[in-house]
Length: 542
Ligand code: G1P
Ligand code: ZN
Image (cartoon, rainbow, N blue to C red):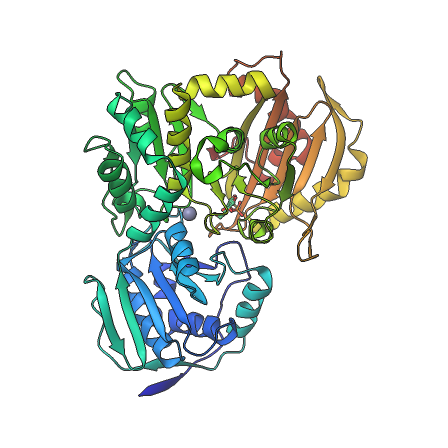
């Protein structure tokens, strides 16, 4: 009953960090999603009869593509599809299911923190058997296949019931609808001291978790409210909605401002957190204390041994290049290796697989460990809860204690969005050309020590990734990084990462904008942001 549908090469996507991401309207074109899914199945490693994991963040069009993918999987010789109930699987939960059940890979339907709805974004990413995002060689091969594809295979069959757990048959394919949360919750219980967290909650510890009407709602409700005993209502916006309630499911000061208002208001709970559309990002905010993702990585790494899953210590720490160097200081103090990788989670996969790193993180609110091969929002929240329960101190106290010991990396990212691509390219090209002349130049009290265009040599597979962003390093450990986003959907986005290091004994209790003012001015002078783009202020500051 397999049917071959003639098709044509189509505008797939140059490999980026996040699979194929386009407007819903693009995915709704006849055969578009099918062509892409077929291109994936044509090139990825999978033995006949393999298992495929399938699920998404519940955004608009999720169920449609799940039904399409099931038919195409049946026609392509898969033996089994494990699909999350209601089509729901967070990105870290999907990574876990792939690993736990030995699947050859998985399709995760999400456009992460981008808005959802009929006029918004959709995405398909493929993860390989280790549970991590497809590496560059695989995404390149998928892209190449989209340029030559001439047919996709499908079977004619009614839609599968996605809402009732259990197995059904589509041709020779077994489709098993699994509980979206259970395997993930079990993994979390194996890593963290739920008894200690529960005891802390009983002693009066409170929190607010904003699921942003996205995928983590069911996970957070089960784990935080049912298993850890936090009061009902601790999880806000806990029901996944197809349009995320009209908001961007992006856990930052702009889109999660209600949580910030709660945490900086009277009667703030002890701890605040949020996650993004597909559940891989996290936001950590204490009462009157925002913790930058870079600091969160460093603080988690320094205290991870307090959680049972990490009691034996860490094998190493990895951070993406634009992430602040706060974690490097922790690694140094613990005698661990610290890796600086290009932006994007996939570069951590090799290090985790090789047992060279245990904890990884990115400044863009992604933190995770070797428990899966994706960043994991709720994991970060639970590690924080575990540490606070054992230490019995506040987020603010823990942060201050950390800075007193390691110094403080004041940090912010400025994004200039929807720039004409050509202007952004010229800016980066001129900046790259000017690098050799930069060392020695001074901007007020800041003197450039080194400047380069970041290249990464993967210590595991020997590959080199160049052109990963411009680093301008100042004497004393401060830094500005410039790079163009690889995930934007409109024009180009310039990201400027600003980092000012204050050593132990320095100014550790100042406001971030004050501490970064000199660097912001220097960044504009160095890259000519206003000159090239006409912009005088960033669109988003995180
Ligand atoms: C952004 C983040 C990056 C993250 C990626 C996928 O990529 O900066 O850290 O890995 O989204 O979530 P960018 O748009 O900067 O290329
Ligand atoms: Zn995400």
